[in-house]
Image (tube, rainbow, N blue to C red; front, side, top):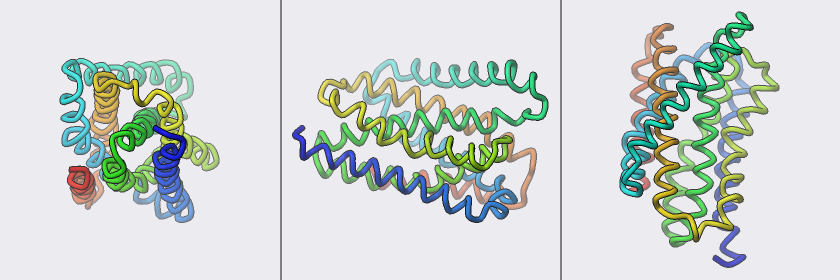
Length: 245
């Protein structure tokens, strides 16, 4: 790709980061309301993450790497082991932060996923402007709720507003242009096998986040309309996948 081609993927990655930041800013402005309805956002996030993984990320990784199931398992187990580490060495030493992992685990999963999004921008625009534009349309749709959910989960797990804002901005927003910048010089050399493996690891991490952290947490609180929020997340994931088709 030429120098001029750099600005297409870089510009779209900045748009994605801006949309995520807008979500964080919006929910911070209405923090009280957000705290009262965190369970709904948790259910919504679970619906988005699990559905997007099964409907798009996993099938895509399977089409690119024959060993994708092994990488999927690796991503799932890696998040599980990290969860055990945080529980053993952080939560047990600080009983007041027993919900710490509720924020940290999703933070890692979303951060890695957003980082891989940056790779996808570079690769999609390397194929063609149309392919990159279609990828942008689908991927940017999930950035706004992603920023909201990341920030709220950090708050709920005991982080201060300032630290939650900083970590959410880094993990959910800044990682996308960072991934694009790091991948751009090597995009022509990135093989489908490598990208497929990365996508599978990301999917395994996101399924773990949604199925073992978000949904059980929401079920304990048993909010009246939590099922509707979950179905709303599924619907958004379906729309995203259809827009990428």
